[in-house]
Image (tube, rainbow, N blue to C red; front, side, top):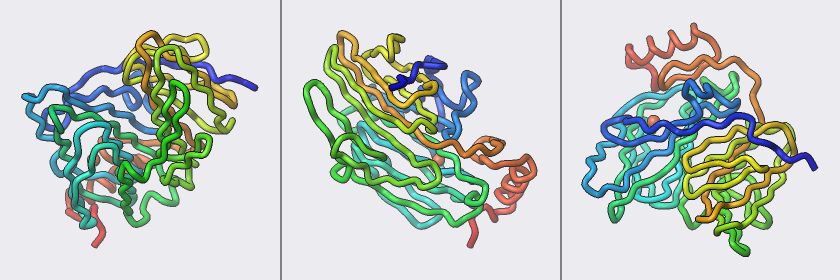
Length: 278
Ligand code: FE
C-alpha cells in the first residue's frame, strides 16, 4: 500500500464574487491553476442572515462541466437549455456546458445559512463543442455509508456499499463528502492514475501526518490510498479524484478550451449572440 501525501497545500482566500457572495477559492488561483482534470473549486457561503446575496446573474460557460453541491440553503437556477428550478439542500447540479450555455445561479439562505461547492471539471477536446446536458440529483438519491464516528456521502464513485449516481466517463470522477467525529480515522483506496484532492471545510484533520486546517485544499501526491484523521473538533472534508485528460488547458474567465484561437472564437460567439447553438 502506498499512501498519498499532501503534495501542495493552499489556504483559501475569501473573495467576493458574483453580486455579493463570499467565496473561498483555492484551486484555480495563482496557488494552483489547475489539477487536471479539475479546473476550479469554489466554496461559497454565508452564515449571516442579513447578508445580501444576489448570487450569479446570467453568465456564459463553454468547454467544461460545472458540478454544484449545496450543503445548506438552496439555489434558484435557470439556463439556456430551458432548465429552471430550485436545487435543494444536499442536492447536486451537474451541468455540461460543452459548446455553450448561459445561465444564472442564485443561492438562497435557509434559516440564515447558505453553503456549497462548485467544482469545474474539464472536458476532453472531442467533447468541448458537443451538445450541453443537464442533470440534478436530490439529496435523497445520494447514498450514505455510516459507521463508528464516520459518515460518508457518495456523489460519485464508491465507498463500501454506497455508490454515487454521478458518472463522468471521461474522468471516472470520484466525489465523497466525509464527516468524522473527533479523532476518527478515514481510509480509502483510490485508483493510482487519478489526480486527487482533499478540501477541509469544517474542523481540521491530519492527512498522512500533515495537518490540514479549516479551508485548506491539499493536492495529493502519488499512491493508491488516502488516510485522514480528524482533529479534536472533528472534521468534514470532500475527497475528489479523477483521471487526468492530459490535454492543453487555455482558460479565460468562463471559457476553458485547448487553444487560444478557440478562446477567441468563444468570445466572438458570445459577443455575436451565437455561443448558445440554436
Ligand atoms: Fe455558472
